Length: 221
Image (cartoon, rainbow, N blue to C red; front, side):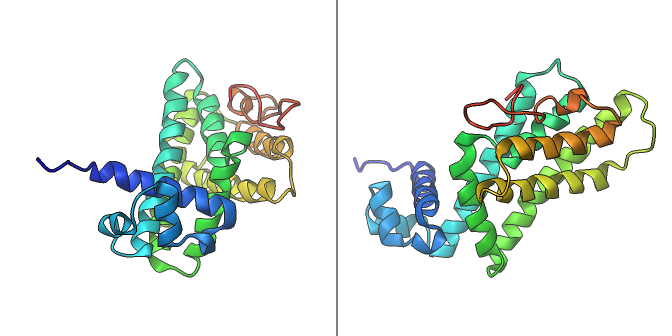
């Protein structure tokens, strides 16, 4: 009998090869031939999985977005006893990709963002990813606002957009060396403390510092 091929598994394997190449030299360094070599499959196999390079890039971007979203959800599940405020802090820190082990993922993400500026299909996928993250932030902020009295009304949608834009911008600033991961964590800490109107809020515990070795956002990571 002919050997069955795990088509979806091969697509994910090819997407990982795209990410490794993009991490090394940006999307301009991604060719079908190099992807096939890195994924250890034939050119024909790549072309059977994806009709065009753009289709391959779209699938890869979707995989990156899913991975980040799953990591945030897993982080929240691992700490079910944390406060609603700390859940916001954990989520925004994960999305900012401040940890050293997420630096390659941050480089790949920004490579796709740059390409999306001239690719309508990639931009559409990015907008969908951002919309999902924004909705999650909005839900967490609404839960946090409902969990205790605040000195002033909080608009969850507006603050969710602010946090998402801040996290996304900090990814770039850390990646190019304008800020250290510690400094970026302090920026997030200040923004979250402003929301809850108190320093050292539970919601900032995951963003208010760094370990000395890697410069990563600290507690709870």
